[in-house]
Length: 364
Image: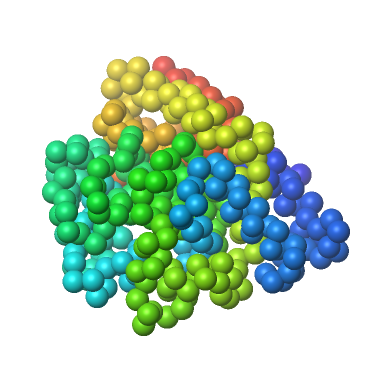
């Protein structure tokens, strides 16, 4: 069997081995079914139990209140960039406020402009996208249709440590890269959504947690597949659902509830992993330079570069000899990016930390 590397990819990303092993066992034939998980009907009793358990797991992990729907949709986060303004902005006579802390927030604002007026409440370009705004820096409109943010920017490695205050205006959050990594006060959000392939499962499904009153705001003239109301009424089964992706998401949430013991425990592990790498950066006396400001550093995506960029190729070559993969940073930021999502083993982070220390000692 091929040896598994430590996969630091930003997404599709590392999955828990326990979830992969169970999926592997059921690829050929699920117990009591006789068919592969890839073959069963989305209308079958077996899949009904799977999707209901996936929702129950999410509700338990995130303490989702009863007045929120949990939708399993296709199209990833990028479809939500358009679906959100289609359902909440178009025809409202209002503008939407967008907080831009990185690449994904900017892409979302661009899509929203196809549906209505967008106001920029804060633009991180003024700080080279190295931090999130303070509350007093936000220029929010109390009459806005909603306030939008991305809780964790994978490319820049900046993360909101807590939610901005939006008053009575619904807060809408793209939590694609940090969902299930820590407890979240869902009641502070009107919509919180995430594509699965960074921290919750494989590509192919997005989880959209939406408050009932916002479900009811869906215009009647929307195509059914783009309507939160229509998808909620159909319990995410308006069409053939992404059966396998939802199944693996269920396995990942089983792992979080069982082996990990919930999101408080997961947060402790994630903090410990991130601290290893940030300590290696901070104690290198300038050999490594972090991109994000310390108060807003991501627990999921550690972005850093070498003061001497000519050494970057050598660093990646040595990383490969230690089975460390996908560490090259995004072209817009450069350097390196270590995505240390929930399923990244502590041992993988320790191996990267040790490489960083050794490389600094040999080349500093």
